[in-house]
Length: 613
Ligand code: AGP
Image (cartoon, rainbow, N blue to C red; front, side, top):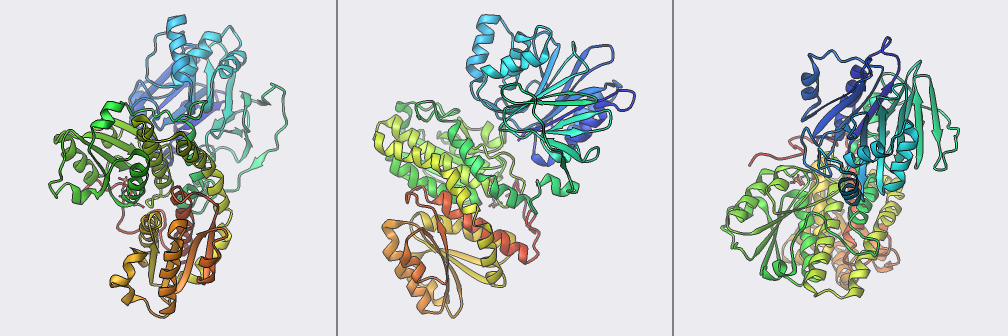
């Protein structure tokens, strides 16, 4: 997600340019594709400098200008609307060049506001971003009172956003506002700060205000005023930061992986709700396939690597069931060398968190060269896979820092369901009742994931019983088989325990020979329609001495009866259960790896993006 930093003080004591850029560097861990800064120079001129790429590009760009100011805002951009570029980087200015803003979040109704600003007010936009709409709105309403102009603009907007605003007409004041995206205020001596996150300020202040939703902050160098949604001033207790810099980047979590596991309710919610119109209809931005296009396809491939491939396995079930078309799932490194059957009636779906995995990119290029329509599900805006696709469907998981993929996986699953629903509805093969069941089920998922996360201590206690194991089997049927592969990969890649996943029905065809006294078997048994058969498989393992950890929906006592430990997931449909079943597996792997003293965020031999063959 984007990073915001702001400073207001006295240019004689400190240069806002240095402080803001230093703060942006502390936010680099969040992932970004461009950065920028805005100041009001001492001659009253608003100056904005911004560059695509690393913050060092920005520093190089302004190196010879000797910019100095007592007020400044800065931004690291994680693109959501508009590819990474100098023009799309923040800060953005209004038409008059008097107002600059930085923004973290998404303005959902930016398109209609932009249309109004262009058609009714003749505004000429300089970028593709939703953020510039905010700047132009504030500029439109500005009549000498920047606070009032910000409030008028905010009244027009919907979405999730935190913003920082400065105005050359009022250089001794900074305005900030929070709605959903995080925002904090740092309290200094004869200076004050705003930021998205604590690390940006830690070098200067340890006393902060945590700003709450729908609150406005008015800052001068020696005063901070917080207003509630009714513009009444509110008191806020000071929060004293005791974390060190590294802990602050993880917002107090011990590892990025655990932080990102806990960000999944938000990632799922944002990936679903921002594609839902007021009537509950799914509106898939970035996908332009018509009914004719969809009916032309007689073959669908889902191609990916690792965790993304495991998401594709669920995508197969979802798209086949919802859109009534056969789907093949391939590991990218296999697809590209097996001379696959591809033509202009083929839909090729690439899934990639980074959008830079070479195997996936090469498979995409092979399919494209053979005439396929390319749809990609990607987390990094403007990445290679996204740029080379005909249609792109972004997961809104935000930057995933830990090598082990968690929130990207669950948001990829959401995209698989949404694509299936979109295709089925567009083709006219999906009845309204089924459509609504899925949509309602997806909307309930964030809270159900949160309910499992509240079991964290119980899962950590289970990890303490299991962390010394050296061989672990994951078994399941249907969707549970697909999730068991993901659970096995999570355990392998961060704890280095040898683990193996297999469709439970396949055990008797050889693998069960390995089951012996005390072999650890994690049995996923959430598919009601396959429950009896899964319980039989569990019994087969248990009679041979296996130690069973069962994962089941609440109330499925037959699973508990034949398990040594049980982790319950909330009630849900068989089809949507992967969104929940994977959570205990992520947590179990995390705590086992932690107990084994592993480098969880950066496991040995692994990279976050595998850009080589
Ligand atoms: C997942 O935990 C791994 N880090 C790895 O399997 C990853 O999913 C795979 O390399 C694909 O990466 P991508 O999604 O960025 O293409």
